[in-house]
Image (cartoon, rainbow, N blue to C red):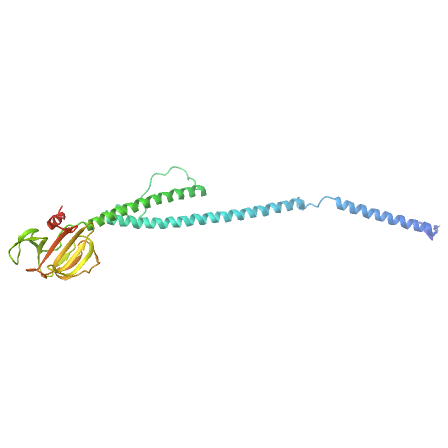
Length: 312
């Protein structure tokens, strides 16, 4: 192989003759140099620092992304927990509102039962409150404080419910006792025509015992119950004509005889002052009147004592 070297002067040139072993050695040397340079570049690229994007390395960015995902998950859990707490408080408030409505209804009924002034206890209006305010905006309640207040209010409502129920029971019992209290006249208009005790029999003139009192009046006028009770007889009975008998409990029974028309039937529950019959002259009678009889544990009582109770 001839290698010609050309200088600046075209007329001057030099040539070098290379044999094949020398050329092979040069090629091997050149390949080694090129391979070494490539390997060094690869090693430099492998150990070189990571490129920086906007002043932050990729590892730092990945770290930030992981923290952001963790915070997003935590925020989601907080929102779910808060929503569950709000739902629970809303449910409790709804239950308390229903209990308050029942208390209002019960309170209104007690006001009516006790004949109190509606203006003094008006359950349709919120209680009147007020007072001067302290300077400052104040602080809002947090969830724990609000939950504690609801617990206290729930406890107070339960206490009020128990008290009002007890008061309602007492008033109802008192009202029942008043209804069962035998007192007053069994007629709305009329007069006493025969007293309780011994008298001259109107048919024979002999001295006989009279178990009740006779109250005369206009035929067809009202006969009313002197107390609440259950009708145990409603129809014809020997000597009484058409008879109404009412059991008031505790062994106390009243009878209303000689009725023209009976307005109730056996088993009816009657109230004090309720119309039970119309005055007549059926049975052993000389004219329109009601034979009023009071019996306790099967023994006759003086009805005048019970009639007088109404005026006490």
